[in-house]
Image (cartoon, rainbow, N blue to C red; front, side, top):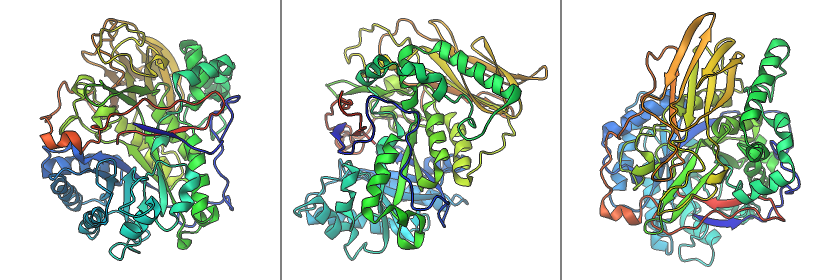
Length: 570
């Protein structure tokens, strides 16, 4: 990971707020073109053993959950163009509207000369005319991971990207370029002739939330604000709840409050917030004025934000030197989506992070392909139940209305061992992992008021989506059931999962399992991937961008709480 500080002072450490107000537009009404898109980051570097059928399966699964396209993170391996071709072909043959686009991994793709620019253009032009290319405003959509330091042999990155890419005759007027440049967003104006928008990669996680920041928040007494900021049901933030439902909601709040440590209460309002969105939307104003975002015909800057459920990586200094976590407790994915939906006019595209980045534990697709030396914390930790969570929120984001729940569903997750474990692990304790707590977390999708039993704890939930948690101790499994009118509509359990009090290695990944009333069986938690051969030798230095030794994320200072942008591995 590479870290840098933005120059925008967004809010003071004296006050942590639940959801920072986004930048106001010139007009408050929805833009003329209200089409919203949801895409998902797919690591091509982890697909060496993929066949066309693997891509077809991924497309079918993603499409069934409301995802519109894969952002194909492409590195420099010689075999990756073949996988890219298969990906586009799979989308074309899917009998759906699913699309593909390139997300150029500029941490590994060379970009120091005009020849490098020519090769990059060739990658884009060879794919952008394909039937399954993702388009925005009639132009082929292209993104990046990083690239802010690429000059292609020119005096500056701005000149290089302009002359050799965005304004080159091969691509000028043909692409809609929305990169993830890790720069102060107030510098976006320097790239006015290059960028058609910006992708806020860091917005998916509370990466500004470090152990030090948590201590500061607790010292200021921010834990006292927990009950006023936490929304245990999805509609609390936008819809008044009265009567019996209001009483149920208050009890859910009280229950969670009794479970959380003072530290977790103090930082709750930073989980899933809109801090990064605020910074990026201000920066987009330097590309031509925020008023242009309400008028597609004016070439409005596109804002692509991120949503994610988890982040944990545990590589030692002898491999990739990445050993840290971002706090995913307290329903990060759901809270992030709710923040987005409550301000949906500000967002054009949401990129889910990720389909298959196993090394950083934020995958939501099946465990298959080539794992980047992450087997120890990935195998057996299925995340596909998060796809059903995304499906619900994707529909709300696209339509502007939370969908009616017609099928009861429960999605629950837990880490595999106690947070305070003292482990003889040579890699060491992951940075920020002291923020985690020993709970099982559950999202309840109820078609009517119900009773939920989570690891023996009984709660009432209203119709809609509710957030429920229960304590977990060594030796416990995880289980839940949903009852209504004397009948059980959903039963889900973790099978052989047992919470460990004495692990032999640190693992802050989540074990996720879910079931719906119409499923007939629990979402499976495989004990091994369907295919996980080692990467070819060339991949160790390119495709996954893990080869560059990295440092821990930069934490907020005591004098500035502007989020610290971190270019994490794709």
